[in-house]
Image 1 (spheres, rainbow, N blue to C red):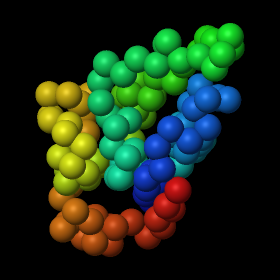
Image 2 (spheres, rainbow, N blue to C red):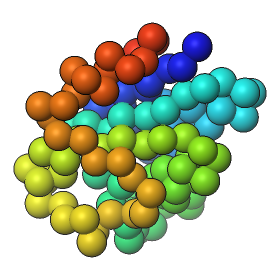
Image 3 (cartoon, rainbow, N blue to C red):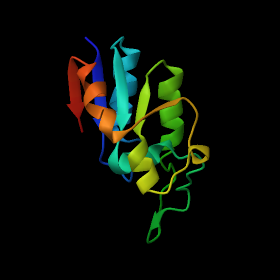
Image 4 (cartoon, rainbow, N blue to C red):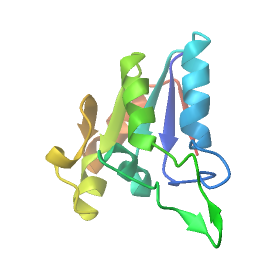
Length: 126
């Protein structure tokens, strides 16, 4: 059964771990043979911005030695055959242009979300 993972909360658990937990579980599900796609909306559309660099992140003397590389994680999902939709209105609200984004995304307008969701028998929102 086809599943759509909607990711809206951004940068969850990327301080203790190197990956967003839902992006990670989507990789695992796809690797196990699940038919799964992703919709990035809200602040999570920022995951699609190329050239993110959190390598200077530190807390006092504690340096984050394995910073998140979420755009790379999204590229790997696309390479696995996962369709990654991104809400175009949310990109625009955050000042992101098409040239700022990784390749392989499927933009969708907010007004077309109901139609998109109707195409999935199972929708999980995180």
